[in-house]
Image (cartoon, rainbow, N blue to C red; front, side, top):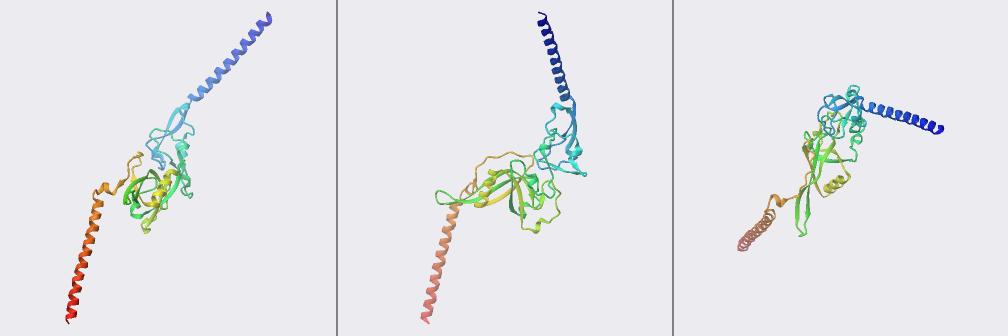
Length: 279
């Protein structure tokens, strides 16, 4: 009987000790989670590919449990030797925590490979200077349109324009790379300018096919607009409803003109022959 009492007492003491240790450990964890930490948040919306400077940064004190993984705690960490050193890989909303997973270093001397967004590839297309110079810059968002001529089931040739790809990030224009200081080069001396875009593999396939079979045109879109538009190709007959009949009339008119010219030429030859024989 005494042994049982001793056992119960010892077991109770051990249970109390373990319970105390558990409560202490839980308390320490809660204390650690609730202790204040400093994080850096966006003081204004930061566009994808934008250089992160002090005007976009604000430090904020929050409980540690609300700090996101890989958070940054000091605005100074965004600068190296007094210069901004990071650009955003995605659009960051005002008040959103800026973490190391949302930024990348500027690509001084490393080309565009360091700034390609995750899951994308870099693809370079050549455009006429007049389409690009002063309009498209690194960090912009663009759409690509394709103009192609094809043969229909009725063996007629049709011309159409369609969207090849939308909401593409411009990684570089000429020698100017996103996130770096633009070089003072005169792009107008060149007839064509290379533009490097961030594309998915599926987009790359569509663009390559469109470029192979037709003409690619580039159009600028607002940085804040990421809406993907669904629409069907626009055919030439959607703009000029009488394009086919007008073409036929033109051909018929040309044939009639040629017949009239042949008739006049025959009459002139007959007159000349008659005059020559009379002589």
